[in-house]
Image (tube, rainbow, N blue to C red; front, side):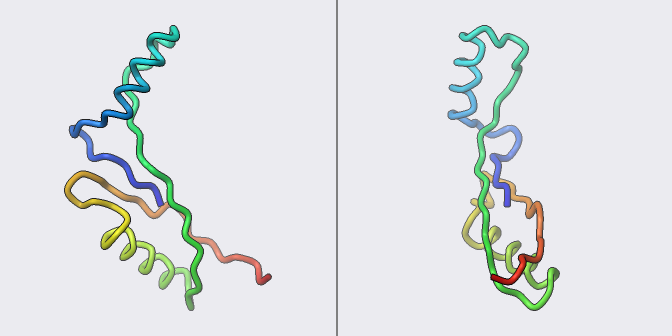
Length: 81
């Protein structure tokens, strides 16, 4: 899952990185937004069930609905161990 700050909201960590990159001479950088990547491994009967569970996790715990958006990026079956 990828959790990122909603557009238009302040992102202090991204702003600090942006200023630092500009100070290092990376003048072409116009904006930096910092979010988080969360990898979850789970057991499910199907990819649809896994996606539904991941969406519920993000909606109920992993993302703040007021300040963050989330996206479930990839659902893939793992090889048995």
